[in-house]
Image 1 (cartoon, rainbow, N blue to C red):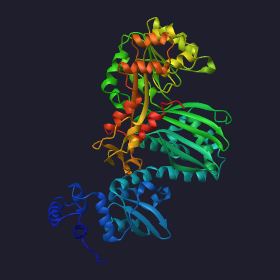
Image 2: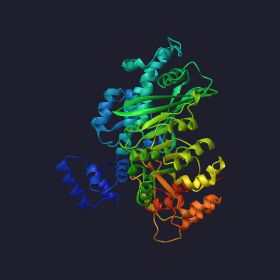
Image 3: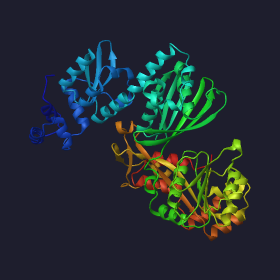
Image 4: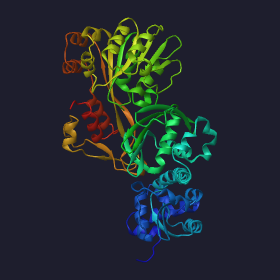
Length: 565
């Protein structure tokens, strides 16, 4: 096929008209931008249409950068400055050919600069602008990690892996730039922060250590570390957490505070022995996170009114329920922040303390020293508290003390592991709390889950199938529209970006108290509550689907988690 100009090619493909081309050319002369960018900015064509046209025009391949892992060593062939200047990123090296993803493969100046810098023959490939920008951030953000790994390899060649980290201590911060192990750990933590990861998993396997990060509730493999370097990395993390580096056969817990790009990050570090060595999991808690607010976690409408009503109680028990990782600790923190004021004494018992709250006395549980939830709660009652927060009710003793504290004039907040709000009553009875005490002390139960939000960049409407409608309890309607993410570079082709909480709030009234005293089951309590306006988790999820905030698939996953197996 003979070479055609981009505008002519788009006209031949029926993507634009001659009039649109002439208008775009006029704008191009004024703004001095590339024709393709002008057409996209003017909403005449999509980026995908431009890519298809360039493929035909230049005969180059399209590459989906979100579906591949770029080797870190390729960063040395294209300097960071060139990559950012021209929006290009190297993707693979085959003999003497360097394949480079470009949002603008017509930029021959960029190709010449890459050729001069790499001393390789440059083979251009087409990628989307946003995907290229993200790949640049990932590759060159990990460049320091790659260099640190190489330096660690050289160190291992001249010293015993176990010796180097032992010599490091908390005073090494001033020499962090000179210590490859420290730099490697710092770069992994920084990347986790930039990727909005909640957890980092370092998992020893046969021949390597895999690093995975939990992003929006889903684990993703990030990189691997050679097995002979894992001891250095694990020792460094244990030193940061104040853990015993010589003890490798029992689980340990630690904690560290780091600063990443002017954000204070609290690290909870946990070690666990495995057959290939110690596995380390880091929980990242952003102290300056904007998520610690009612609006950010998703409290709105009726739920917000219930929330405000609960916090107006001068005494009683408020329970937050849900599985691990459902956001209970974050919601508890928001509650305590709203309750904190000069005239009240708030004391918390936590295991561990996750968020530091101004004006609140926070106590760390330490069962080795006898500081248990039950023992700590007894001590708190001698501290003239107005509001008490108990991290978790785990046994009947703690529950009974909390309930008795509530009926003697204290407001008590705590968490409990149950599937839904009505089941909290059954759980309290199971661990030995008397029904009359539950009905007298309990003010409300907040059940919650975290649901993923649809990515706004690839959000598309569609007509749901009958099984999706049935799952959400909806009748078939021809005009009903659901939404889902098709997958794009912004969401790593998952279709989701970020999460929000969805709530099920049970407010206890006189009829419910009578049923609790009479020993009614969770189902009976739920039926009575629904007669008085109680909205279930299923109904809340359905509302989010209809509003286009989440998908029917995500709602189904959330709903199924509230059903006992």
